[in-house]
Each structure stands twice: as structure tokens, then as C-alpha cells.
Length: 271
Image (cartoon, rainbow, N blue to C red):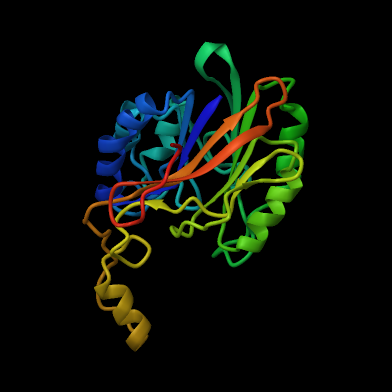
């Protein structure tokens, strides 16, 4: 299978990049399955139902969320009727929606998509991501119950993301980090066959401070005092993410490539 994962969609610029590039990439790269992290797509804070529909219309099969999952209040009800949205499985036992689900890709092949939140340096405590993942991956083994599986690990620390990658090695097809909005350069296939990247980066304007207009973040860093609200940067965005090819029989990765399309960053993707 040919699977594309795109990192955090950031505001209007990120949505525009998804609309502009994803339909073309889906066709040109003959993609079988596309997952997009959409948790910052609405004003940089959460995801609205209307913006979720825009991402699906552009070609996403699944949208994952994160620690801002329910910043947009309509998501509390929208996620109950839209089964293609995955929120973190360790967010809260009372949260609406679900943190893992099996989806159908091309030719009827099954793909598990799941998301967990990390615990290190996060603003609020979340349940243990390792035990949550362990139970789910046992239930849906690759090469058995599903032809492929993807884990979105949404957290601050690259060390925690790497630990999740090695914990899932050979048990998931893909482990990819989100949340920091900065793409890392460590795309690889781990020893037991799991494709891994510490952070996919954001789909947003990189002439910014992690997707926000520069002036207010700079003011706060320099003076220690806030003056205005953060505003998503509105320049041309780069689509950032990960392209992976998997073996249907084993569920393991056979190829992994970083993806950067459009905007300011050096371009990358499968040749």
C-alpha cells in the first residue's frame, strides 16, 4: 500500500495548501490511503466540522486530532457522527469519539489508525500511551487483522516519540510524531519493519513561529509580556509529512520518504 501522512494543518494557510496540493498528490503518487492531522486547522486551535469536511473533500481518508481536539465546541458533537475522525485514545475516558478504528483502503484492504498523546512536557497529564497502544496493537496485528496500521504520537519530546516508535516496532506499519510543527530529518525503517519519523512538521506557513505570525511570539520571548492574541501566519504554506509503502502480507514498511510540497521549505517526496 502507498500511504501518505500529513502533519498538523495550521490555520487558513494550511487548509489552502491541503486544498491545492492533496488532490494532485493523491493522483500523481497513486495513494491508497491518506491520513491528515487536523487539530490546528481552525484558527490554529482545534478543528471545526466545516473544516474537517474541507480536508476530507481534498482527499483525506482519516483526520486525527490532538491535545486541542475539542477547542472548537462543535467537534464535541461532530465527532460522534463523523467516524473518520480519530481523537487521542488516552485523552479522557469521558471524551466523545474514539481513539482507534479500522478503515478500508483501496481494494478492500484494512488499515488501523490510532493516536495517543505523550506525557512529557505536556500542559496537562494524560493516561499512559504505552499501555493504551499495547492493547490496541495486540487486538489488530499487522499481517493478520489489518494489512497496515498507523500510530500518530502527538507530544512534545522527541525522546518519548522515539520510545513509542521502538515500542511499536514490528507491531505497527507506521509511527509518526506530530505536535511541534517542526519536521525532523530522521525518517527511517526501524529494525523490525516499522516506518518512523519523530515529527511530520506542519502544513502551514514556515515564515512564522511554529505557524503563528512572528510579532507576538517574539514580543513575549523578548519582554516576557503578552500584548495580543496569537494569529496563524497567512503566507504560502508547505505540506509536510511522510510517505510510506507497505507490504500487504506482513504489514511492514518497505519504503519511507519525507514529504514537503509547496511553500518555503526544500521540496521532497517520492520520485
